[in-house]
Figure: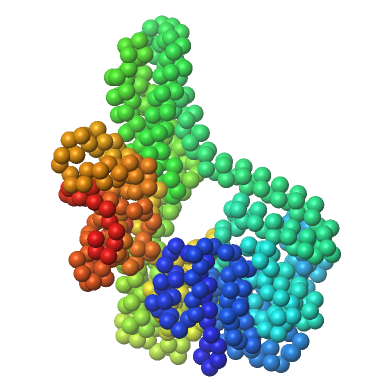
Length: 629
């Protein structure tokens, strides 16, 4: 915005990651609208449009990085092309590859058919086969187009007033097509302008492989066809696409989610069944030695216990962990032996069957975890996470700040060194070389990731390096005004955004599950001894109320103190009966609470809750209201 008389408006759609607080803290000049609920793309943008004062309005997605010359280039084009109602620019993904949605055609019946069936890929430069992405227009060719992508829509206010604002019947997707069509209907043209570029990571608002995305997208297309009768011919095609893609995605998601559980269920049950038949024949001379009740009761019971133990220990949580599978199995085996000892004599079977069946499943466990996906990719993933060599392209001061952020994030990055951002070839002391030697530095040190400083490296150099070096590397950009580093997830999923951030153990499904199990078991134990506690704990009636609320999940025994100003940046927790720390003055709120809560969430283990519950046992009848109380 340097040299431009303008304003920045941020509309936050009830995000839970601390965005609104970050904007207020780091960008006090930005006009912030903090919604209390998610109002959708169209309504939120209209909120910003209503209060905007400029002659031109830019709708910009949050998962974009804008070039330094983008605004001035667009303004100059608008001034020289008075027939331009809106402009879109060249968009690149996280690895520097051109995004075809930078220029799109209207969703006519033929264009939609080519897009939905994927036939447009056969002739990507054809105006007939690739109408959806207007393949006849080159990536570097300035031209009139039909539709702009909602990620970047630079609109003349006069055109917007004639065409109308975004249609709020669209929650997400389709509103950019509708607005583009109305702008052209009002007498203006829409232009694709490749003289400047932005990076659009995509996929941050919704994952495009999800069923929710498919249904939302096609629902938007139906709204568009109902609103504009000239496109009504494709209603049947859209509905067929909804059913086909929805069913396909539903099958894929369920198979992906449940096949490891089904496989383990089959292997566990069949292991005990096969061993039972073998032992009956070998030891007792008859394969029918064991009563039918053993096959209908004992084997399903043993299978269920091991499956439950595997689940509770996180064996089916993503990312998958072999360690969780082995811990879950041995825990389940101990539980089976305990249950075996408690069963009536007529329901017990030979312990040798349990032992041999468990050994057989151990063999299957070892085979499946080492040869089948997703487990067989763990060694590769582990190698990648421990062998992520990176360099930093920045000045000495910024390089130090970036290293500190990476150390705090616990990302497995090995910083090989720094590269001087000076393009003249001048090297700073202690650097690996200059920016002009970047190719050689990457080759010699076998670097896989590059972190550029937004403060020290021009945006054009950042995007130029991505294009020249290709998608085999991961490129990240360190913001100069906040503690954020963003880039693409990796070479295989370059379109989606990735951010270096603090990894909280409390965010893991296994930790959440362990915390909930601890709350339930400890509450049940305390309810049993509550008649005694009534004479020991202050405010016994409040204690009883707390026990019920913890048991029902409305509270948890240990949570953050509500006076922590950065509580929204931590993993979400229910209100707590107890806290890791309590403030005594304003300094505690700003320092002590923030530090202790951060450590609690980062290193969480259920034994932490146990130690806090034991040490603060006399406070279990309290109610925390905030403001130090």
